[in-house]
Length: 82
Image (cartoon, rainbow, N blue to C red; front, side, top):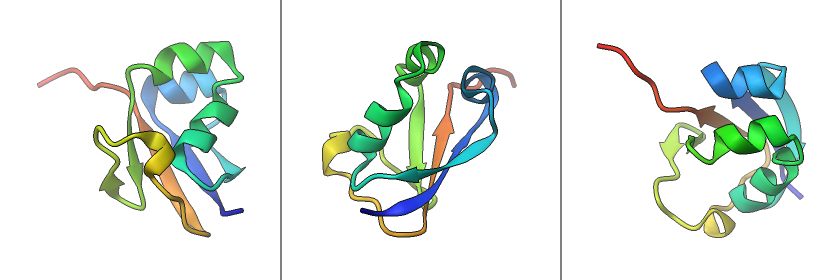
């Protein structure tokens, strides 16, 4: 089981109630399932993108995105502005 840190930004941070927290998960899909136990965060995550150690997860199936030990996962809601 990989351990690491998940960091929330903007609306995801507000919904999670914390800026970051530790996680234990083998894949991004497993991590998302764990953190969506919070219904407020679940609604926000539907619109978010993810960076895993600085690399975009993109449209890949989250269950295929493996997390390494010590990974940092950034949860990025859509940003607006100019």
